[in-house]
Image 1 (cartoon, rainbow, N blue to C red):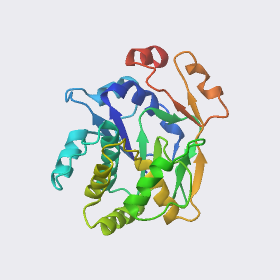
Image 2: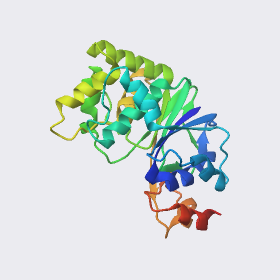
Image 3: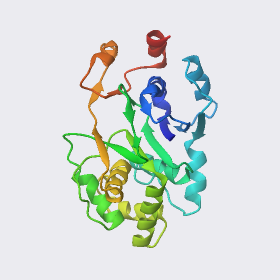
Image 4: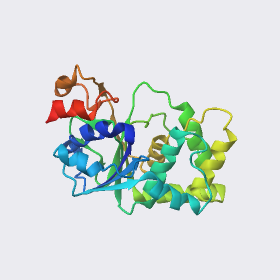
Length: 261
């Protein structure tokens, strides 16, 4: 399993804590590509991770502009036109398109598993669903982008998304067939139609709904998050009814040095 891991420079401490819990992610992570959003090219993530004893031999750091600029220049699309939230969704899909692995896990940097979670079983993805969230605003873009109606009302907007590369290729081809243009241009065009309003798009909802179409027996796991702070950090492993933890930027690197080193 190849992981695509996304970090903004304000979330470095989050990423340190998250990577410390990699042992709960299954199947084994063979390699991780870290996409790092920063304007500080001299900031070395690898050095920071090594200070905390994180194995770095399978980590590769790519600065966001180094993938975005070459990719978007070929089709003349500005992924920042609709703000930072949407540009992050674009980035993840571009990274997915560029990744050559067969099994891919997309992961945000501020949430981690606190119990073993298997994201692929029998070579099929196992997706997370979030309870008590109504995803209508996200579903409409699946319908518009794919030209299909969604058939489930599950919310896949979590922090993890396992994807088979073959599923992504099928989705990419579907989008390009429906819209008769590059998939990224197609998404950009749909968002431009709604630019006067907030664009409620989630790449995880798009990928999750598509997975349900590709795999009739798609397995899902309900995500129960433990939202913790400095005060309750030591209780993470006691929260038996939770399977994930979210640190929500409560920690700095100096905090982690006290807690972990």
